[in-house]
Structures are given as C-alpha cells and as structure tokens.
Length: 138
Image 1 (cartoon, rainbow, N blue to C red):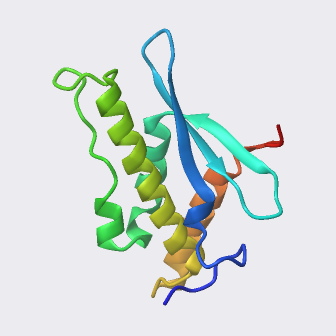
Image 2: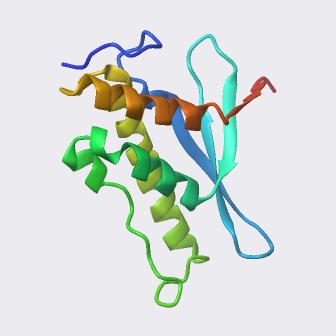
C-alpha cells in the first residue's frame, strides 16, 4: 500500500505528465513537463533529455533499483536518429513513466536511510523549483 504524498493524494506521480515534445530548428528536442496538483495552478517547463539525466544522476541512489533502471538509456546520435518521431515518442513516454515513479517514491518517504532520502528529496524539489506557474484555464 502506498503512503500519502505531500499533496494529500494517493500518489504524487499522477500529477506529472509530459504531454508535448518540440523540436527546435537546430534539432534540439525539448519535452514539456507539467506538474498539476489539485487546487494549484499548473506548473510547467520545457526541458531537454539532459536535464532529466542530471536529475536521475542526483537521485538514483535513493530510488529502488527497478525504478532507477527504467530511466531511458542514452543513445548515440551516430547510431540512432534522435529526430525520428518514433524515437522521440518512445523516449517521451519512458521519461514520463520514470518521472511519475520517481516522484511517487521520493514523496512517499519510504527510504530506509533517512539522511540519504532527505538529500535526494532536496535535489528533486530543487528540480521542481524550476517550474513556472501557468494558468491552464482556456
């Protein structure tokens, strides 16, 4: 059974989604990450895969092995076309799943090492602090 997260819902991860991807003229791919807690404004940010990778490197020791292993592997651009729609969509869904599961674990506070958990939770919250509020009403 899951612990309650700081938002009062049964999971924190369900508040995260990556609904869009855009490709810039230079070929850079950015993902729109949204964070919407009930009763709060939607917060969002456009970010690159490298931002997720940096977050993963900072929090991976606090995550269960199966969650940490679900992070999408880096692929060399020499061998994989990062602009292909199939590749971008597969990576988007994998990042969304990983982010939801990491958020669930980190906000549930279930780590056996409290100091390790606090340190990694801090990294996660710092990453979230870079989101900007956005009024989602049409």
